[in-house]
Amino acid sequence: MVHNNSGISGLSSSFIQTSGGKAPIGGPVPVTFSAEVIGVLKKLDIIRLERNNKRSERRKAGEANVSEDEDDEISPYFLGNSTGANSVPPAGLGAVPNAPGPAPGPAVPDPVVPGPEADPVVANPKLLFTDKNAATNSFRANDNTIPNAIFSLAKNGISPPLTLFLPASLARIRSSNVKTVKHGTGESTKVTVIDVSDFPDETTMEQAVWNSTYNTFLSFMDLAAEAHIVQGFSRHYDHILSDVAVETWFPAYRNFDRTIRAQFFTTPYIIDIHSSDYRTALQAAKDAYIWSNLPSHTPSGPRASGGSGGRERVDRHKPYDRENRPQSDGGQRRKPVLCFRCGRTGHPAGRCPEKTPSKHGREFVIYANSDGLFRISDQRAVCMLFNCGRCESTPGSRHPIHVCTLCGDAHHGAIDCTRN
Image 1 (cartoon, rainbow, N blue to C red):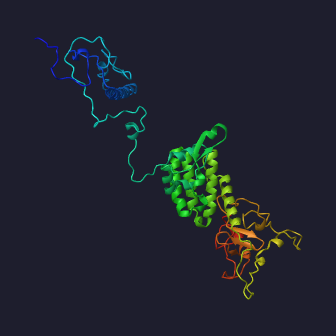
Image 2 (cartoon, rainbow, N blue to C red; image 1 turned 30 degrees about the horizontal axis):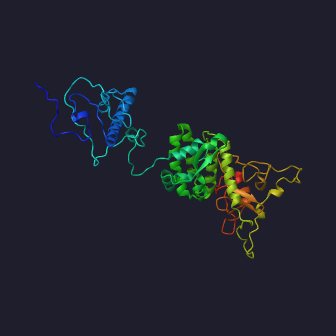
Image 3 (tube, rainbow, N blue to C red; image 1 turned 45 degrees about the horizontal axis):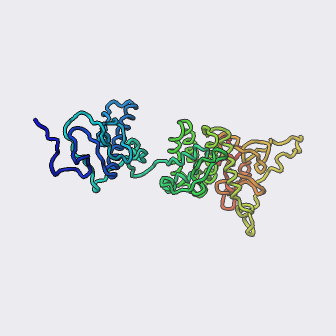
């Protein structure tokens, strides 16, 4: 067979030119491409290189079924011979005259160049979104994830306010619609965290909202801490809700819980609801709540019958002034005075210095002042003589209520309380 190397008369590529207007037959040939074509081919080769790099990473990771690298099928048209499977032609490459070519082979067709209506997609070596990362996520009808910004607060020793776990707050944080501040001193000032002052204060939370939000906080702790820590917070939360008077004491419990969390995120510990420190701090929170809500004037007690609208004299229910006086019969003292507030002896309720009741696990039922004893839950006056075992009156609208100041039971007074 005789080969005609003169080409096809009247047919040529507008992008391929050789001396004499003839294209040699067989293998890659040195040609001159326009700058536009060079740019397109370089982009196609970058895509090939990116795919080969990903194959290499998969092999290093130990993946077995990885296809072979793609050969360089573009550079040979720039250079008379291939510069390797992972080469990229130099920018602005023009004609390469007289470059040696490989052995004769089949005729080489004109390269296929995408037109302007089909721009090639260029792979960015620094992709913002990868299949590998996206495969770990899925669409959520209700997004209940905890934003990383809250974890960042905890990591830097900042107690996340419960208001951050409100649905509206979580949505704001997820959308990055938040202010940020620098945290710490020295090198640690480089840390940027969300500005918690840009969210509502915890003291604005009503009990129902606080309850539901605390469950979200516990979900956060379940992701951030180990089992015993999470159990401590769960028991602490259950202990608050188990109080039958939680509605009355809610502001005190809310402040107490904030103290518990603030100390934990500064110096982590496991909450023990049975410890004396826990009980002392809880009682202190309740005491602070009582005194912060006392009226500036003395509490109004029940009115005395036949009076002129004045407050009932409750001093007749205060036997303390006579408790420790010497008796005429032999000069013996009476039994030491029983404190109707804490249940211990040696001091009256009005001067009680104790932080916790004498009975472990109990909480104070009453408070005392110069006007007598008053139940904490509703500030109603409590009959002192009933608790001394000497009242013969029938409780009514004008008489202090008959309840034990130590346990709250209406069937016995403090001196007969078996639960003290």
